Amino acid sequence: MATVKLKGNEVKLSGNEINVGDKAPEATVVATDLSEKKVGGAQEKVQMIVVVPSLDTPVCATETRKFNESAANIEGVDVTVVSMDLPFASKRFCSTEGVENLTVASDFRNKEFGEKYGVLIEEGPLAGILARAIFIIGKDGTVVYKQLVPEITEEPNYDEAIEAAKAAANK
Image (cartoon, rainbow, N blue to C red; front, side, top):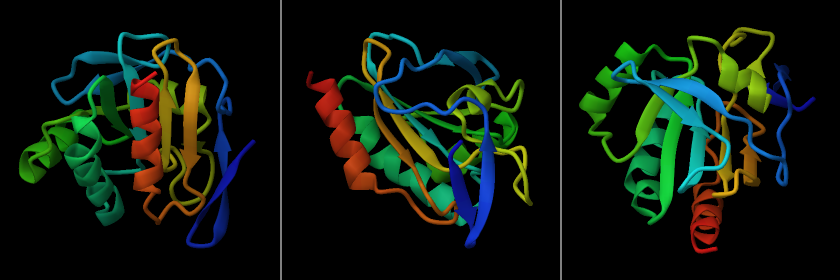
């Protein structure tokens, strides 16, 4: 099972590790309006799933704003940010930050996404929330890109993820 670090200390993740080439499992997350959204599996558009620990942290807030500006404009790509934040807090964040080009959703209800994608933090001070990661899923439901950020407190490689999403959308 993959591990990541929090301020240099190793953190164990639980769930099923998903890698490039694997079929992306379907999971249900909860949008800010409390509706359910299915992520993973085969869909009409390429999916970019941006996984963050909490929108209430500066790194996660910055990451969500950046993807709202850049990735949401890629034709043929559906962008969803997933955290464990309650939908009410996510809605407040989106209205305060002007995030309206992507879906912000929560895995709080069943922790289904975290378990199915192997990004649920199992131990330490952040136990029960999600590690920072990005998954890009082709229309056929296959994972074509994965970035598990090795240090939870650091931002992902935005350019690499955006290029991978563009490439998948142009196939």
